Image (cartoon, rainbow, N blue to C red; front, side, top):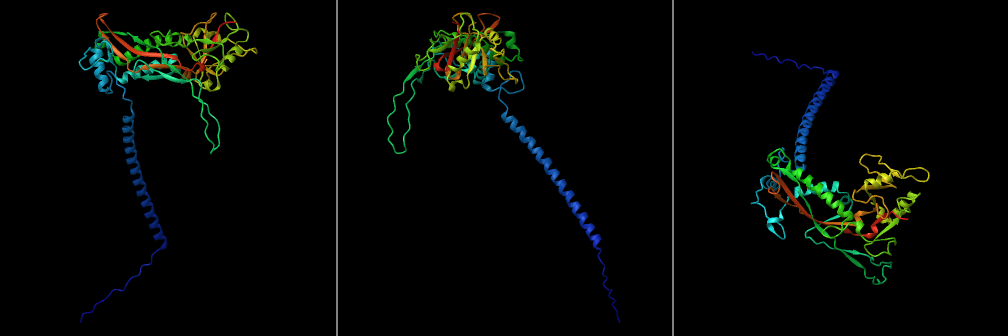
Length: 392
């Protein structure tokens, strides 16, 4: 007879403290794993972010062509500089002259023209504060309202009475051909490391600035802009003068300033209406500025206020001073100081394209780059500019 023996079931008592410890170890392990996963994700995110930043920087980097540098030049700039400016090849270019094609020169690419314009604004004092418009032709005209349009108040349902007809005057800034003629040796042009683009833009801008700086102040209006000092002048206040005439204030002394120079300068400031004084500035040359910096009020305080922060202009009676060397020195009968909002008061009209004609024959072994541009200028709003005249 078979006898089967079944072992008795054994019951093991679970220690509550041991179970709690195991659970704690399990939580710690899971936390460690979670932290490791989070660290890995952060590393991946940082790597992706770094790649995105590199792509964004590459996308926003200005496409300024560099001659002989590591950046890739724009095709039209590289072709113009390497083919025409360096070697004189003209097969790919068309003259845009309105008269004689062979003498017209070739329009520089927009990138180089923009470089010339930036440098010109930085070194041409009147251009930096005047209103500049780009034109597509030699002539530019603008209508200026001289009388304004009548207005009034009515109720919601009342009839609208007819307003007076406004008066207009036409502004047609006299223009002229502005030219520069910088030269470089052929050895410089053959040097691949020579930054021809930047050199040419700087040289053209410097010569343009000298010529137009004089014209915007004293230009006759004959084949050149009409300077604001060449406009008619009068002592009559706004609204009484003829359109285009500038108001002036006498200095009180035939040789310079009287015993109360601050009073005359304050009078000059407040002949300008409040709307124009926002953004107004003084314009004078360095010799006049040297005299103005010595002027004091009756209690001994200097009228001149040096800029307290780097980059801010020095101020006279709270307004910035622009140095224009073409303004006259202090002398009897001259207008050495102008004050006004030139953005409202003086208009510069220019045809945007600069043309360059390469001339390797006139002055061998130098190559001349004859650059031309049509520029005009005239007083726009004669109420926005005031003058100080040296007189009794």
